Image 1 (cartoon, rainbow, N blue to C red):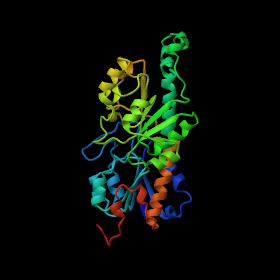
Image 2 (cartoon, helix red, strand yellow):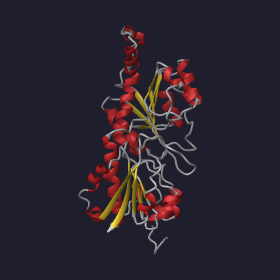
Image 3 (cartoon, rainbow, N blue to C red):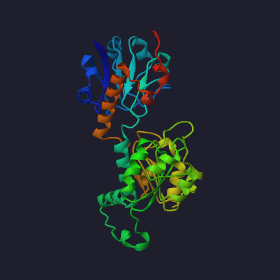
Image 4 (cartoon, one colour):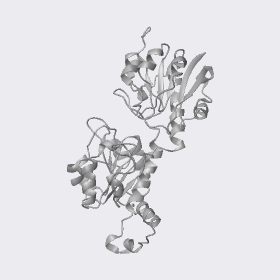
Length: 353
């Protein structure tokens, strides 16, 4: 019988994975052992090779020795663990971006790494839509003013200062992956004019989804709402800086449910204080977690949430189900190239290790 080590946490519960494997014949012959890490009640750690991870329990070293399968969400998968995983044949990570896994180390050892790029699409798209409405219509701001005992209804019924509704607004999506595509589908219900910039997605696909393919400059200058949906890397870090914000319309909103490092927060703060753009709604900041003393938190035209856009039961259920299926496919000969971070490891060899 094959063996699998599943590193669970307080979001990715053992019972969620047990539900996910139910009905998949491959998993009927896999002995599953569970170890828990204390996320989200423990802060992430970072090293040079991996980030946003929670250290695995020391017992993982003994468990992994006989395992052909390793499944995790937030638990670290690093060199020391892989060194002891002599029988390991595949790693499954529930995240869309498995930054807690040392991909290079897996590749060196010819171990495929599969992940779930679309798992948080529905949850984050829905949350992003909520931020757009909350920021545009003053919902979040007025909740705070009411807690301070202030009633300022008149601010919203002066015609010149009354906010626009979301319907028929022009919304620009920077990046057009799974989340942005799910968001576009929701925005169509509001009859929004949707523009998107993503060099990896062709114009024909966007047109079929009712989206106009645009450049970043066109999105920034023409859209009433600009929403970020790209991964953070060396080429995208700080991609929305002073120059880009200056191109935005005076009343425009900037929405970020991707990564804080995409935005120059100093430039954004200055633009918001000077009224150069209408506002911002941010689910993620450059440095997380933050202690509540953040310059953007004091601005009335900013909505801040603590990186919770993906916090929905559907997210972890989708991740568990897809990882269980991809691992079963791998062992039964249906190679999951599309969801493998190191597809070169899928080439059959006699005994790579």
